[in-house]
Image (cartoon, rainbow, N blue to C red; front, top):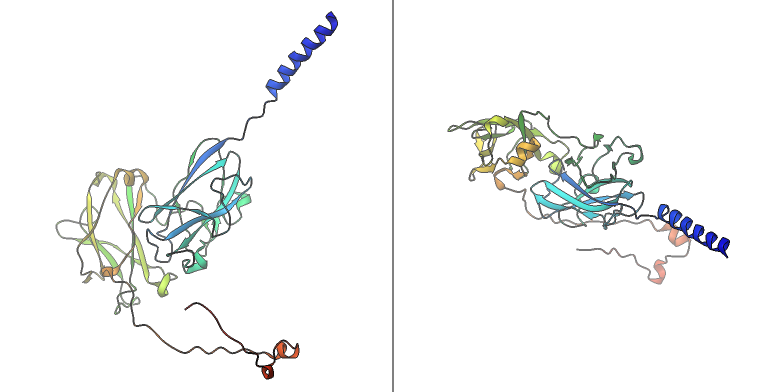
Length: 321
């Protein structure tokens, strides 16, 4: 009886030991925050446009689920101007590859270049290929700013459209000239003129000449450029006034544009000013009407007995108005 008791007692101890060491804990979940700047998209995005985060998770455990399907990707939220943010939960150790996809209004209207998909990315992570990529850490992740790749050339995952300097703040301007009917992109150049601290006060001076985005929408209607200002000249709340001009002589016939410098801008080292139409004039023109002729070769269908004019078979073209 004593031996039996000792056996049961020892067995119980072994169960407790092995049980305590063999307890399986659930996989750790962390919060992931991504911010993308779409000032480098070559089309006309607005705060009410759509930006999706599409991709694949190796473990398939993200919440919301990330997919390559552009109808079910994670929707980014506009947090002001060109800035969009996506938040989701992921499992530690997961490998996620992804890209940003842009739509001007709804999911039926992607931006014109590559049907909304951004260009190739070099993430430095082998499993991602030409996509962006991350390996999920064991703590919440707030990724650095990512700029949408609106070009066909391969860019680094965390590239920027301007140079970075610890002592200066980069301000990225962008204007669409599509609504200026007499603008000549060969002989004329849009410029930004403004007050201090980027320019001068009380008499404004040129802040920066803009460069044409030749592959942008409407045959290269976007122009952009970066101005730099020493951080020592800026305090939180400083107002910057400016306007777009053509060669410094033709000015926008609108009230002065302006924005405020903030502490966040100073800490990040850069900011992008949401694009605008020159003079707030969007491209316009009369409606164009015309006749469209459809032609079909039906020999193969007739030989196969699938189409017979003599029996009254007809071809119709259907579609949305």
